[in-house]
Image (cartoon, rainbow over all chains, first blue to last red; front, top):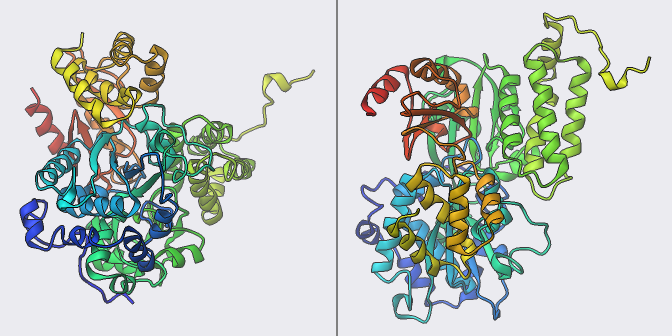
Length: 432
Length: 154
């Protein structure tokens, strides 16, 4: 299932980021083809290809597009999500740098299919270099009439703007992203209504990840049948796997879905630094459930395979921790991240993330107790599912999985604690 | 006061959105480029330029971490300490920089040249540990690289 070795998103072509080179290699032919098709047929191709969202949700892209009303008196919008804030994820910047026109072409085909007139590309504000690279590509595409009025001599017109974020992980959540574009704090919205009905300024809106949109020209060019046969059948295509942490060759590797996790680590990323054993793996960005080193044998990297073992593909950001890693310290750092990035709207997340961080810091200080392990789990369980957006879940999952898989680390910490802790009641509970 | 050039910049962005409130974040970015940070005065100025309530701009500016609500040095060093960087020694890098500049995280050197902050993931996990100095990324950090960089920054 994983013999496919072609790089389709990031092929090794020198200067592919330049529009002339991109055109020489068949660039913008998919757009030419698409604008001659009926918009619903374009959507249908994407639907049949079984392309799934690459931002972590794995939602079928074609299906998402069909949610957009066909006839709307209101303008329609497409937001390309390049917030890329999930720790362990650094793939979209590769597209902006190495193959920006593929992404732009994908946006335009999507816009044509859904009848969208305005495309916003939301990019995290820290990516100055990549914002400039993409802006150059957009300008070049405008100059050749791939973007703008009457694209390629048709009635189809679309504008494309970059919106620079300002440092908020939550803005990668689609409804926060829209609030951010509208000029507000990035608070997630309650769903329903869903963006396709009530998105930007109350108008029909679709939000797709950068990598997702970059797959679209390939599907249009080479057909859904070809695409649907790459990698894992129910989650086809290639993924830009970002691998980081304790490996010899960290980086982004484009590989078909369903690749063995061990191949990704040992064959592509050069194995673990210092030939050490693996203690833990985070398979798809900091929000996903951890795996123990002993569990990774024969694990395949696609949505279904990872779901079957209780975790998820997320953004494809794989983080490797070697045998000497202090997992509690790492978990405390991740939990600090969610505490810092919680928008503050929902109480379970705003307060709960802070409590989890506090408890974890107690363990690091040697002050954790056996009871604290269950307290920590109970806080996590009470955040999960009780918030407007998935940030709460994302904060709870790593904690739940580390307690489940590395409980002995917590217990060891308590046993080896230098301080014999006696229970001291807080002042307001002292009755005397 | 925002320069005429910057006011024009804000003006040209207007065509991208159906209403001016959407210019809040872009205008704050432009203002920060000019002033180096966002004071309450600046927030009020932006509100006036966009004709939106002052408390709206204050609310937005305080929500987003990229807007510096305190003055920063000429070079703002933002060191990622999130998981991938942590695994590859971000903590030591942070200590090294602070020791070298003789300040703590969050502080600015006396000559107003450097401010050191620890920040969340900057999307450079494959080239960890890393930091951002003003707009530029510096990746695969080592003490030698930091020595070289800090002497180059005049």
